[in-house]
Image (cartoon, rainbow, N blue to C red; front, side, top):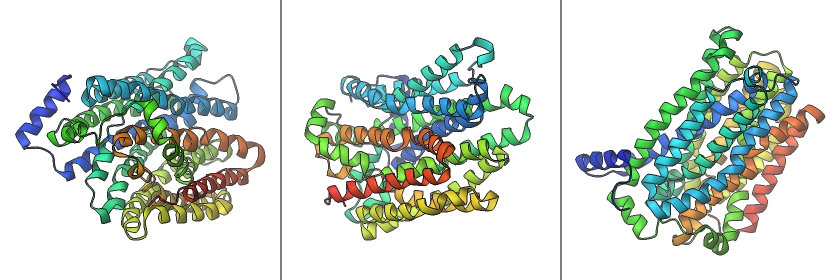
Amino acid sequence: MGTPTTAAEHDARLVNARHHGVNPGEIAIGVIIGRTSEFFDFFVYAIASVIVFPKLVFPFVDALTGTLYSFAIFALAFVARPLGSVVFISMDRAFGRGAKLTLALFLLGTATVALAFLPGYEQIGVYSVWLLAFFRIVQGIALGGTWDGLASLLALNAPENRRGWYAMIPQLGAPLGLMVASGLFAYFAGNLSAEDFFSWGWRYPFFVAFAINVVALFARLRIVVTPEFTKLFESRDLQPAPVLDTVSSEGKRIVIGAFAPLASFALFHMVTVFPLSWIFLFTKNPPAEFLVIEAIASVFGILAIVASGFIADRVGRRTLLGSCAAVIAVFSGFAPQLLDGGPIGETIFMVLGFVLLGLAFGQSSGVVASQFTRYYRYTGSALTSDLAWLFGAGFAPLVALVLSANFGLVSAGAYLLSGAICTLLALWWNKALG
């Protein structure tokens, strides 16, 4: 890793020197903080895509069309993310992980907080649309650079019979990030007048996102500058390999890894972003109330993710993922009716959805990573994650809303079913997953 390349990295090394290294518990905390900050940014933007941007940036079209436009821009980050991985992996190889993480999180935080100052269409016209798209693309590129290898570090140090437990730790960041983001938006949307909320209230969560990114940066640097992490880097266990070489050598595993978690990734948006858009556009329920339901349901998601670790260590990750995909396929058959069943149906839909999501999503990372050869594990895992999010989640809110608006909610269930089928096919294709 060489000498410190940033002031933050230097400070992290000083802390490590005073505290005599980092233990596995601190690695887990660093992983959770890092993933929570990423998902908080993600959900802050996702929620604003439903209840803010259609009115602020697309007031010249009806609410449904504005939301579809907003979801199209939402997807740009997932398209840009693989490009970010390619760029930042090269930077990692040249300047070290500390410099890469610092720049990536600086870009992510800057793009996120810039959205808090976004002028509306009424102020600057179509330039508001272009600025929104630009900042979203920068977020995607930056997210590609936030891959730090800490999840791989946990996996490498996991006992043979505890791999499922360690695999679920990074996934806790998703429901934690959603809980905080939903809670913030629910508070401001529920306690401010519509005029105040659309004037300044919606902007506050983006400032919070920037602050959380600063904390996450130091928490992650605290780990990646340790002698233990450096040793794994130098021994090629966590060394970034050239992207083209990785694709050439590990292409099959990357493809399988991208499709194996599609059931959980499709469900991910079906219980987070999409239902909020449906409630906001097609019911009279206040969005603040549904955001509270989301925050409560995310608690069930946290418990289910933890449970996935215990279950996977007993039956195997492949078995758990396959079983969850089959149950998700069944859930897709009656989920639309629940979502369209008023407050009680919505609550049941969200709780059941988050329990299923937690069990499947809890093991979706690293299910293929252990199959990569040592030299390509770091880069292969990063590319697999990027492609899984692109195929499984990037366009999910847009596609689900288009289908539902034109063919009814049952079509959204069919979309969820397609994700479950893809997972089952991917697991069948590579029976070596375990």
